[in-house]
Image (cartoon, rainbow, N blue to C red):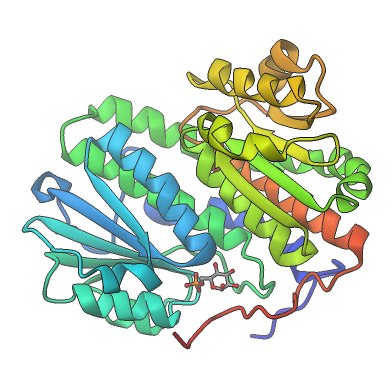
Amino acid sequence: AAVDKAGYKHFMAKEIAEQPTVLQGALAHYIDADGARVVLPDAGLDFAQVERLTLVACGTAFYACMVAKYWFEQTAHLPVEIDVASEFRYREPPVTPGTVAIFVSQSGETADTLAALRYMTGKADRILSVVNVAESSIARESDLTLPILAGVEVGVASTKAFTCQLTTLALLVLKAARDRGHMTAAQLADRLADLQRLPGLMNAALAVEGPVRALTQELSEARDILFLGRGAMYPLALEGALKLKEISYIHAEAYASGELKHGPIALVDPMVPVIVMAPTDTLFDKTVSNMQEVMARGGKVLLITDATGAAAASDGVWKTLVLPDVSPFLAPILYAVPAQLLAYHTAIAKGTDVDQPRNLAKSVTVE
Ligand code: G6P
């Protein structure tokens, strides 16, 4: 069926707004009626038998893999390697027994990702794919396909597919943790209940749109913008920078906050906005001290945090965006919303073609 903008100015705006609904659908698809178990299309996948995971993708889907690496390692104690598809295959990585490969792709047709999948076929114990288009090449050539159920995504800059990829991967992480004995049945049920709160939290997070709009005129005048985050918020910083450069054409870079002093701090001056993504978690104080290093050098900081973080660290920052409280595990999903809205409204302020940015394609089927 053809999709239209449903009254929104752009597909991107519609797809950002749809996230609470599509996430709800994805959660309902994978969580059993009792809220006690993660149900996959193939009951045979047992993570207790898995020694290591390899996650491969391109673009935004790669950043979803990067978040998943933190999650699988911390929550399921499973070693993970990740790579962009265009590098992975040419590295000729040795594949040891017990390896499961996961390919993440909205379209399921990205040429590099498909080639990486073919490289792993016959080498990995099992090939999984996390796709939006269920009848795609990548889905067809996998042993097990997990649809992300985002619905048709038209905007070239991926939004709802990213948060649905993250949600599907989070469910897989929880199943892995349970299979591997790192979570009791009761703990799993708690974590699933936490996940079920996500659509409501996303809805509440969309309320930052007003405050975002109020500062994007000023952001749109910047030539360079830096994004900082630590831990699983580092890939979100990368995604925020990617979204912004894709549609506003402003040069944006992301760094792991702790790496700032090893180079990018040289760029800091009052003309370079620095966007810091920092929910209150175990790394919060460290991120704030990195942020203070920026401010001490005249940097103009936009802090994205929760109410506790805002109360603790807003002194001296240029602007603060306040998101709802969320468990640290799910923060990367929620913090995608301000990243998307900042890119969207900055692009509007610049007058660029939001849904069809120059030189980019929705699906890249050539290498
Ligand atoms: C293109 C799109 C991106 C997307 C990437 C990977 O570059 O513009 O939005 O993240 O391809 O696409 P896939 O369909 O494999 O997720």
